[in-house]
Amino acid sequence: MLKSQRGVKGGYTFGQEPSSITVLEVVELLDGPVGRDAEGVFAEAAGAARSVLETTTIADVIERERRDMRRSDVLHLAALATSWMNTRQ
Image (cartoon, rainbow, N blue to C red; front, side):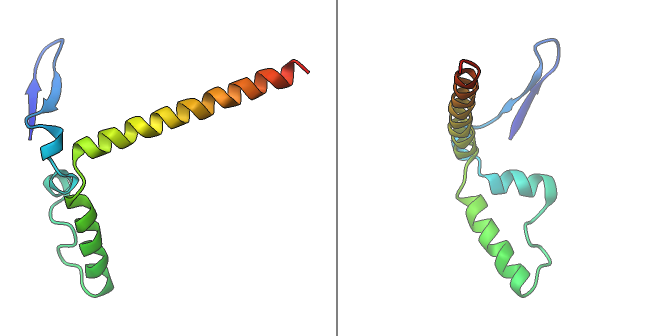
């Protein structure tokens, strides 16, 4: 799933396209099966979580983060403009 490179310019990159890796794959690789021993309502909740995680890819997460970052940048600029306007009065 990941490739590593040693050295000064080292680090980790995806071994596959982010659009082909689901969040469920990553979670289960790190933590094991979601809802493994769950029963009753907890098994239902785990099933719902699995459903969301298996239909969300790493590319989806990246796009959401970019969209949220742009939105927060706009809000930050609006707050700066408002603050500047308030100091001019």
